[in-house]
Image 1 (cartoon, protein in one colour):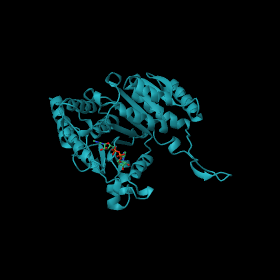
Image 2: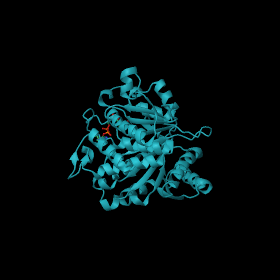
Image 3: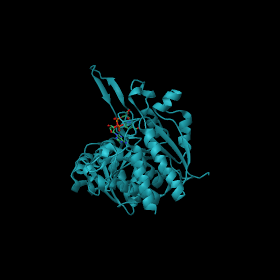
Image 4: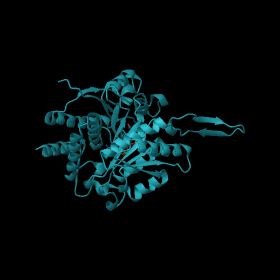
Length: 371
Ligand code: NAD
C-alpha cells in the first residue's frame, strides 16, 4: 500500500546489514500494530556500492536519498577497503551524503538506560538518569573552512593549517535546532565554544546570545568554554539538557558523552538539514554511532539497539511520531530489563545472545507494551 512516508534504507557494510535486517522487523511490527507504514527503497552504500559499481555512493543512490523523507543508514567500511584511494573509501559515502544533503545539524543523545547504569565507566550515582543531547554543527568550521592545507614557509619550513571559520547564518541555524529541541525537553541550552581564545568563539557567543534574545522564548541559554564542558561532562553530566557547539568541539564532546552511557552498540544519531519553507520537509539521515565492526561482522553477534534507537529518532524528527518513538525507546529499556544481552552490554546474571535474540526481546517487549 502506498504511503506518504518515503524511507530510504542503506545498510552498508560489516554489521550494517545485520542490524538493519533486525531493525526492519521493528518497522514491520509498527506497520502491523500501529498502522505506520513506509514506502521503503533500498540503496547500496560504502564498500557494498564500491564492489558493485566502483563508487561508494552513486549519483542514483544520492538522488534517491535526496528524494526520500528520511534515510536510515547502517554503517560503512572494512579492512578490505583500507588500500583504496581516499575518494573511493566507503566512509566517503557518508561525507558525500552529509555534504550533498546539507545535513548541518548532528544530534547525538547520550541516555543511560537504568538497566545499563553499571556499563558506564563513571559511578552509577553520577550517570543514573542521564539524558542529554549534543547538537553539533556538522558542515562548517575547521573541517571545511578555507584556507586549509600544507605548504612551505619562506625559510623552507613545512607547515600545515586549518581554519575555524563561522558566519552568523551558520551559527543561527544550528542555534535554532538546539532551541527547538530544548523546547521539547527541559528547555535548557548550553552553548559551548572557546570565546576566551578564539575569534570564531567570540562570534559564536555573540550570535547565540542575539538569537536567544530574538527567538529563544521558553528556553534558557548559558555559555561554557569547551575545555570546562569536557570536564563537567565527566564530573556532573546531569547538569546538561541540550549542548550546542561547533564541528570540532562537537566531535570531541559527543564521543566523550557517548562513553558515559557504556556501549557503542546503544548510541543512535540524527543528521538534519534545513526545513524547506515550501514543503515543510527537511533532509535527514539517521544512523548508529558505531561503525561496521569488522571484528564481529557476519557472526550474528552485533547489538541492534543503536539502529533501533536511530529508527526511533527518525519517527520523532522526520515524521513527528513522538509517541511511537517513545514506545520503541520503552521497548528497548524493557528488553534490557530482561536477561538477554549481546556481548557488548553483557552483565553478571544475564544470558548472552546475538542480534536475533536481542531484537526478539525488543519485539516481545513491544507486544507486551502494546497489550
Ligand atoms: P566500530 O564502531 O566499528 O567498532 C568498535 C568496537 O565496538 C569493535 O570492537 C566492535 O565490535 C564494537 N561494536 C561496534 N558496534 C557494535 C555493535 N552494534 N554491537 C556490538 N559491538 C559493537 O569502530 P572501528 O572498529 O573503529 O571501525 C570499523 C570500521 O567502521 C572502519 O572501517 C571505520 O572507518 C568504520 N566506521 C564507520 C562509521 C559509520 O559508518 N558511520 C563510523 C565509525 C567507523
